[in-house]
Length: 185
Image (tube, rainbow, N blue to C red; front, side, top):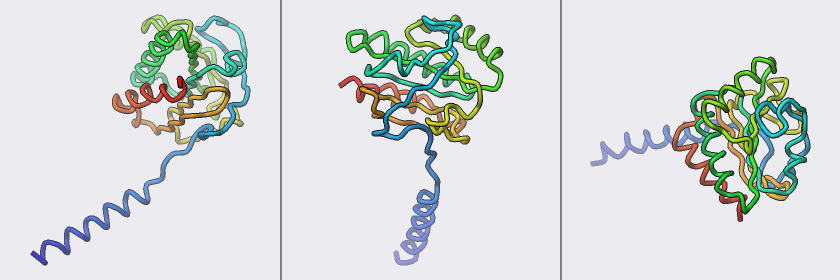
């Protein structure tokens, strides 16, 4: 029995140390931060073809803001589910917008229009782009974050997800969508 305990304890120590040393990605505004203004290029929303500040336009409403470096299948699935949540919560005046971080805004605009049309994403969830992979400096989007999701109400961040490439799974999408309840209260 004693011969079994020592290897099991050693393995638990190694596993615990591995988890403790794994660095969590920190990207975007953190819970409690105030969401500052920034300008995007609207590609599919009600102001398509114009530059504007959706943070300003949505004011104190409950908002989901998704920053993405790629329009992967998982990102598109997240957008579709958030768009549905926005449509389901009209009484709460919930809003959402997606920001594609890119150095090629023309190519991005064409891609976003195709994504919106193919996936029936409503104009209530505008797909926008921002010139530059870093995003607005005041939002502190981490280089290693492929997707950063922030949710705020009354201008204060209530939820933050920072995901590296490959971390946006169906389980994570479900968790993000469920966390919209935190801004609808």
